[in-house]
Amino acid sequence: MRSQVLRPPYCYRWAVLLSAVLLTLSLIISVSWPGTEGTAAESPPPSAAEPAPGRDAAAADPVRTTARAGRFVALTFDDGPDPAATPQILDLLERHGAVATFCVVGTQVRRHPDLVADVVRRGMRLCDHTVSHDEHLPARNEARISADIAGVRSDVALAVDGDVPVPYFRAPGGRWSDTVTAIAARAGMTPLGWSVDSRDWTLPGAHAIVATVQQAVQPGAVILLHDGGGQRAQTVAALAELLPWLIAQGYRFDVPAT
Ligand SMILES: [Zn+2]
Image 1: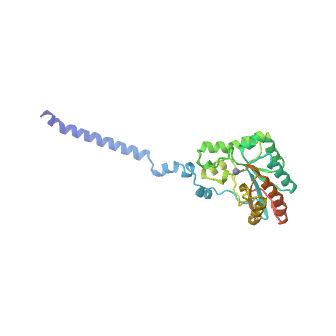
Image 2: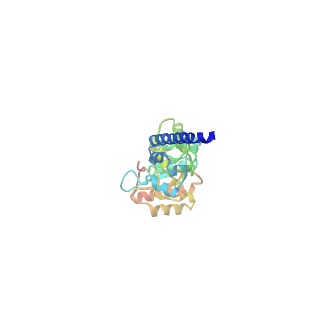
Image 3: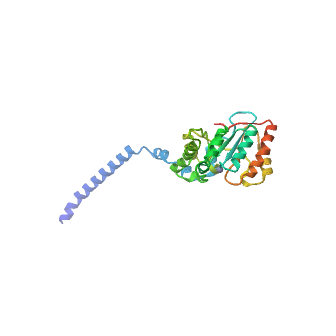
């Protein structure tokens, strides 16, 4: 009987206590939680965690034109330097008074610092093409992307024994993401794309490389070629034909826009 008498007041007290706890909790939540926008804005975009090549390529918007307007082209050579191809390409460029941009890979820069120094000494421009040429760069975390991009600049500084400008960055395989672009931009580099793919990397023969460029070239074109990453004799042979042909067509050579 005694327990029945005591039960109602205890129930009441528990109800009051529970209400007070709930009220306090709701007050804390309403004061400290500004709303879903705050948390959404702090979340990284999906592209930071996962590669989505189609969408990212559009969002990154890399440069695909020459610095100057008019009948100019910008030649770009990726994946070097290479002890076989790079010196031959430099000789051809010099013979035709042409400037070009070399998108160098850090591991190659470390192996051939003298070649990088030669590229710079001959008035060519440098472009950062990452240390490791990781074609899945957009899938990596931000710290790893930063290290892969920043490493090239220290490799280049060691190779030329000083500070030399590296005004461009080109993502390996042309695989961009908003994060990759943002990190390159923070390091003061222009994301560099291309408008003409010579497809020299498919090794179609020098004649096919020449024909591809001849058909696609137009004023302001940024042309993708390779001096490293494999056997580049076809590229060298194609360049020996393309340089005089471009000059005969009234083209002059420029660097890409920044
Ligand atoms: Zn490459």
